Each structure stands twice: as structure tokens, then as C-alpha cells.
Length: 533
Image 1 (spheres, helix red, strand yellow):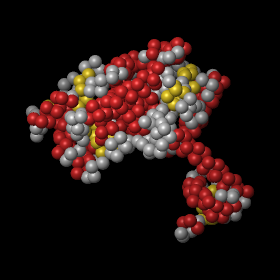
Image 2: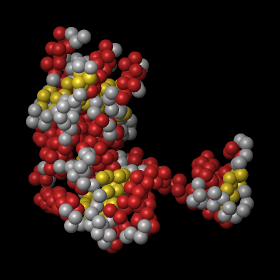
Image 3: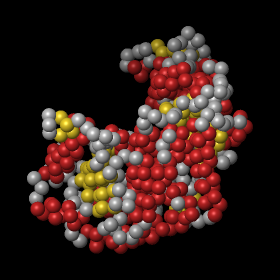
Image 4: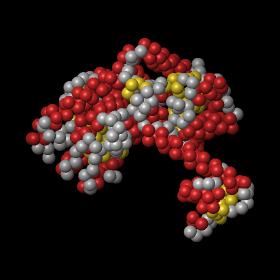
């Protein structure tokens, strides 16, 4: 049971923010009494760094750009008037477009009101919209969303089968900042082909959200798509939910985007204050630093006890890991920083990996997310004792106690209810906590060189595949091992990759490659054959 000492510690460190409907309980994080005093110089630097970002400093020196997602919910704070006007103009355009769609003034090619939307994006262009959509969806939503968030052909097919015969009333929203993201391009081409197969013109159903003059922007303009909305170079993908990227799909779905913006704006106001004991984002950053030694020594497990927040850990995974996972610090020193993030909804996880969290290797700290309001209206009382929501709350409290008994540290974030305002608050809270923590560990939270390296490597793999297939086509009908093919195309050091590429090609109908199996498998032969699968 809770001791008197624990209750006194709870009272001492509870952070209550009625303005934004948020409580932060850090009492089960076992930091020393002098921790805040020790960390205050670093936190003051973090506040100064954040002020510089919000004032328009070049926060991403690699790309020589500002970082301004905070201006999205307070356009008047933008450093230039044209940025303020662009934000206001775009948000008004989002509202106007959505209202016209809902009123049936903007219709599909066949004159039908839109009842579906297919959102094509990846990473920040999908995770945020998916999270907000799932968290706030209702049975009365005027437009139902679907997502292409990968370049998996089977994934495309699964989504398209769900839409079934409703393509004539489906809007497709293509989201790509650069306009050159391969996964998004592939999804767009798949969708376009399906529209065409049904006698529909893609451009009569298509909307672009992209940077001005990107490849997608020029294509949309040339083909006459329904609408185009801007992305700006000062908004990164993982912090783009409160831009047209997230606001347009949300508004079309019927979500109150003004409330979403208000929640984020009020949270920003609260978390700008330079009092670390009362600033909820500062508290999170400081607890992360304590738990991980400022070196990522422990993982962050996020457990929301609410089905509507089941995608929140996935959303935070990108926000935190892409922002903080860096090889070098701002001084160019190799530091290999980051915090690993994973999680799922409670109480499901009590039947999954809480056993290890409590009794296994002590390599994580937990963030519980508590939602006080169970549902609209009354709940059934089971056996005269408690409601289903009472049990859910009991599982959260009980799990935290069980973890504390084994010296597992945890935080509880408490919000009153799930609505657009509270979702905006959570998004803004973690965006600023990430910024503060990045300052504490002296890394650039606003670039992602590792992601770009992966994209470049994928491009080289496709080039290698093209060479291997071209060789087999030239030697049509002749079988070769992967070693022979790699040598023939001048890439003997890439034989493993050639083997994997040919295994994939021979398994699918898209390339006329036939496999002649052998034992062991790496002695198998491959040939170009029109009779292949």
C-alpha cells in the first residue's frame, strides 16, 4: 500500500495545470532532492534555445532553415509578416474547402458528395493524421479516412478492398513535402491506376499537400487537381500534424480543428514559462534525462489506458526517436544519442509485456496516460461493484504500484477527457519536451541524416536490381547463379544483395524471372523467361 512518505512526495511534486486540463505526476521517478537545483543551469539554456527557435533562428543548420511548428497555433509569433499571412491564409483555405465538401458544393467527377478519403503519405505525413483520426473518430463523421502509409503492394490491396465500390465518391489526398518521396509516389500511382480502371479521372478526385513548386505541386497544377495546400520548409514532417498535413484530413473527417489548435496554443503558453517545477514539458524532459542518465540508457515505454490513444505511442516513437537519435552533438562530437520508445494501450499490455517490465531486466521507465472520463453517459455497474471504466482505472493504478514495488520508475500524465483540445495539448506537450531534452543533451532535434541515408541506400539497391534484370534479359533463357550474375554486372561484392533481389523477383509476377531451385539455396539459378510466374 502507499506509504505516508509516498503521499507526501506525491503532493510535493504533483504538477496540476487546470488551464490545459493536464496533471503530471513524477513522484515515482526516484530523482534526488537536489535534482532540480543541479539541472537548473541546463534548463535555463534549454529555455533560451527554445526562445531562439520560436524567434526564427536557423535551428536546422544542415538545411539552413528555421523551425516554426510553434507558429502554426500562434501565427502572430512568426518572425515575418508573410509567414503569419501564409499560415492564416492556409488555415482559412482548409476550413473553406472542408465546408464546401461537406455542403456538397465540391463534388466528385460523377457529381456525388465525397464520403471517403484516401490519405497517401509516410512518416510524419501519415502518423499524425492517423493518430488524430483514430483518437477523435465518431460514427457521425461525414467522411471516412483510409491510409496508404507504406509501399507494400498487399497493403495497398487491403485498403482498396475496404473502399470497394465507393471510389467514385473517394477523395485522394497526396502528402509529400518534397514531392519526391518514393513511398508516396508509389501510393499515388497505385491509386491513380485504380481510378482509371474504373473510368474515373484521378485529377477530379485529387488534392495535394506539398511544398510550392515541388514535383507533386507542379503535377497537380498541370493536371488540374481539385486543390493544393502548402507545406513549408520550416515545418518538419514529425511536427506537421498542426499544419495542413493534419488539419485538412481532420477537418474533412469532421474534427474541430479550432479546438485542436487551441489546445496546442494553450499548452505552448504554459510550457514557455521558465519555472521548471511548474512547466509540464520541462518536467518530462528532466525526467527523461534522470531516467536515461542523459545517454538513452533506458527505454521509454508509453502506456495509454484508453483505446482512442492506441496510436499515440507509435506517433511518439517517430517524434522522439527521429528527433533525438543522433550520432553527433552540436559540437560535432560522436555521442550516439537517443531514447528508444515503444508501447501499446492498457490494460492490453498487462497481458503482454508488463511481466518483464516488473520482473525482468530493469531497462525502461514507463509513462502511463490516464483519461478520467470513461464515456459519454452512464456505465453499467458490474456485480454491484464497479464499472468497466473503474476496472480500467484500477488496472492502471495497480500496475503502477506493482512496478513501483520492484523499483521501476514511472510518470502518469492525466487528462480529463479525449477531445480535439486535449489531443492538441498532448501533441504540443511532447513537441516542446523533445525540444527541451535535445538542448539538455546538446543535439539538433530538427534534422534526420540517418533517414536520408536509408533513402539513398534504397535507391542504390533498385539500381543494382535493374542491372541484374537487364543482364538476364540480355541472356534470355540462360540460367545463372547469383554469384555469376553479380560478377557479370561488375558487382561481385554485392552478391548477397543480388541473391536477395532475385529471390524476390522470382517470387512475384512482375518480372519474368524463373528460379531453378538447388540445395543449398544459394546455388539456385535464375533466368529470364516469359513463362515465369
